[in-house]
Image 1 (cartoon, rainbow, N blue to C red):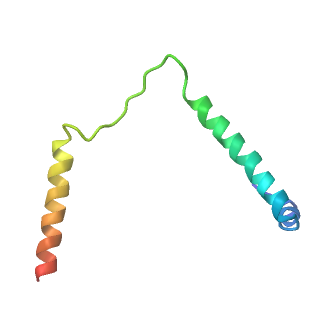
Image 2: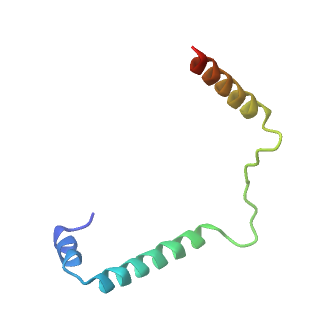
Length: 71
């Protein structure tokens, strides 16, 4: 949880200092993200190919929407 004192201090900083803090935080977050992916491991990736059930659902929604627009 962020303390009110920290927020007050940040609000009092100059624009340049705020941008610097953003850079530091974003770099830290990016580093944490790369730590989630381990080298020499495989990870499943979803692909729309052969997703016939999803395609049928989308087609039905589009058709229902077209019928509602015509009413």
